[in-house]
Length: 286
Image (cartoon, rainbow, N blue to C red):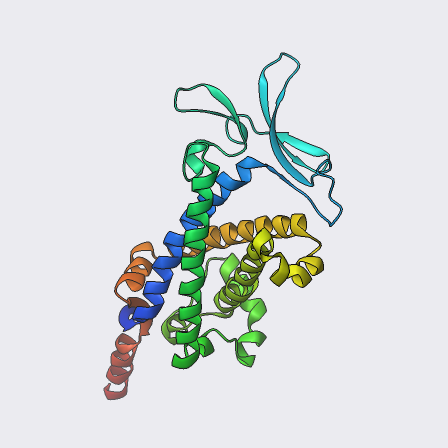
């Protein structure tokens, strides 16, 4: 029988600055997200426009009394709503009693209703994230790592095929497994320069202390309430990216991916055609 067998080879995939930046991002984004939900709970509604009257939110989460007088959690998108009792709007506290709360206590930092502390956590780790990103971008630029994230013409031509392969959970082998594919590159660039830039700019626009500096950008975005809405949307985008990222980490090899982000060492499959070559040689001598 002829054919090829697969074997694994190991190479140094992630350099130390990439690994440090990655794990700092994980810590910062976790705390920023949960403290952000604490801040959102103080006014769980989002609006558009300079002239927002705070009466017509495009998104809101609240608690209402049903026909029997019981509390019912609801999430509104415009005029449409879904019942979210037990998670959004109404959830159980530490004593098992129902309470009005947009996001439950187990999903916020701190878990208690402490807006000032939530803001302190949020702003502190937001600045750590910004500093970490700035250092990472500077290192990526000077080390040439940023070029590794830039799609080539050949990769653009294979864009459609890459989408199909991902949907079918087909993953690259051989030399192709050593490089970022085009979907990875586009996702990372979108998160770094798109969502990352948007969430920083809108975050600054929400601070009254930045009115003088950010006035032009705030006007372009449509006012402070629009900036708050865009900030929320960018945060949702980050969550979606993380969910897809974690899914890919699991389906492509959880331990292998974790090890590569801890030690830098990554195993990738290659085709070993030594068996078929031996068979060919035996045929030549027969």
